[in-house]
Image (cartoon, rainbow, N blue to C red; front, side):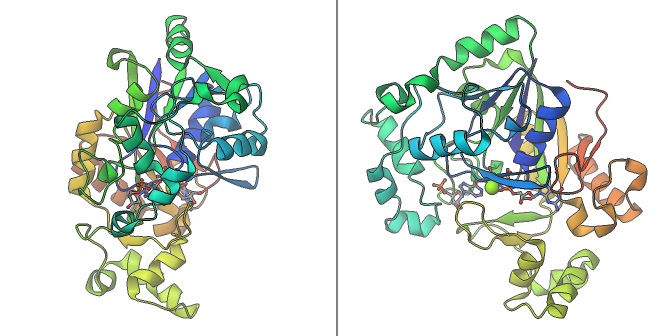
Length: 359
Ligand code: GTP
Ligand code: IMP
Ligand code: MG
């Protein structure tokens, strides 16, 4: 039984939050980290403590799950070891023996002109993936400081699946950042869909049962991308949810364009880079397209409370106001798939779970 969580827009949709909830609620024996590498910044808020994780899966919150980094994922050795300490997961955190290692030269190369034009995270991911393609990269099995963490992730996961144990896979970034499907060249250095997330961990497509595609109730984008449609002043004025947020920003005396003020009220700042994110209205066309290409079985909508404050921390559908329910219904109708997880706050259990049961 394999479930995969991926982003349906431009990253930062709240995959970390969704993965941490599924980890605790569905209790998978193994949680695999897929995706690009430490360019991702996943956030978990658990028992009042906030973690910004770039290498260890947010599923660490379940102490009985083993945590695996798939072979397709780029590893920053220092960051990985720091996060093992931070999350206190030594003994149950492992990485595949074939992960590409990010070295200083990759980080340096990720500060060049092309990286600036794209607005990369500067974490060395693009140059490290290029080195892997050129077959000059070093792999995790060559690093003595990683020896106690090294394993064969596909062997472990496929054995687990054979014996009926649960496996959860955490993707990173979002569909609009995919090297194949995003707004090239303003994209990351790899595909970001569920098929690639499965391949990152050595899981074949026939073994995947559920694909959760995560969308924020609105859209955010960090980095350069002239093709994204951001909220204009006119749209802010004509949309009650956004004009309410702008009013709040003005009451607080926040500075900048309308879009920048709304981003500040929403707390939309990059987890890895600290850069302000730009805000867009929910992109229904992109959402539908990404659900199709990901083979979505479940849609997750996060941050509903940021647009409709009355939703904050709600756990029952009946506690959601009708404007919020109408927004979710619009998303479901346009995508053509039910929203089964609705997130109403940053804490792990701030969720309305409409699934039939663990999958
Ligand atoms: P990437 O892999 O970098 O794309 O990250 P991500 O999808 O895991 O999202 P990230 O953690 O970067 O950003 C989501 C932000 O929204 C975090 O600060 C979360 O704590 C927060 N968040 C997630 N869900 C909710 C929610 O339902 N309500 C509120 N208020 N905050 C949420
Ligand atoms: P790179 O992945 O660092 O090469 O960055 C390429 C593009 O993807 C840039 O626009 C980044 O801002 C964006 N990006 C990469 N990782 C994330 C993420 O985790 N969240 C949001 N945007 C990201
Ligand atoms: Mg993030």
